[in-house]
Length: 92
Length: 205
Image (cartoon, rainbow over the protein chains, first blue to last red):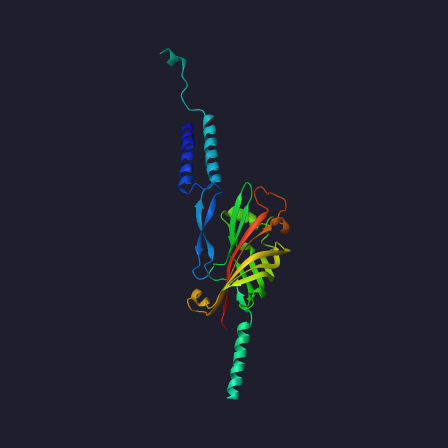
């Protein structure tokens, strides 16, 4: 259990940082819509076209890193299930 | 001969009076091009978004562009931002209250300092801006471009007529329209910059 939590605490920040970086390293809030600007050929007006796309922001990064830190702290307080060393074994 | 001359004069008069009449341009846009972009730049956060639900009508006379008047309406629920949670907050009763105030409008009553060069008129529009049920007299610089006979290009020849393109950038203060005055100004700026990019159509009858 402890080992699993420690591994998760190590993996989560890596995954979060990789996702955040590859999705554009957006340094504001997470977006679930993105907007592109197009030009109407007749009127020459520029207009935004919005479509659904997940772009993680600093809040995504923060939640990921905080979760990882929380798991690391929890793992620290979990006891390992090692068999107690008896006096007999010590004598041997 | 005399009768022909009279007929020609009458026909010419009818033609002249027809061309001199102001045209009504309808700004409801099936192509989804008409838009209003809004920008708020607060010390801690910048918010950008747009609205596409534009409608309204403008009376424009190519011979007297200074006499232009009309009303542009934006559906409040069409205001969008990149983050859906932020959009919910923006539409809620605390901010724009979309349920109670479904429209934002600019009722242009007159143009001031109009200058026309070719098919382009620049002027200052004077009128009433209404947001969240509060109306305020404002002035805004506008650029009107009259595109004679260009409606056919936009409709693949299905409709003939003219287009009127309106561009304008101006600022309002949210506090003036009772949108949480004095609150959270470090994150949601009081100044809102609005950029209108809209085109209206006047089909031939």
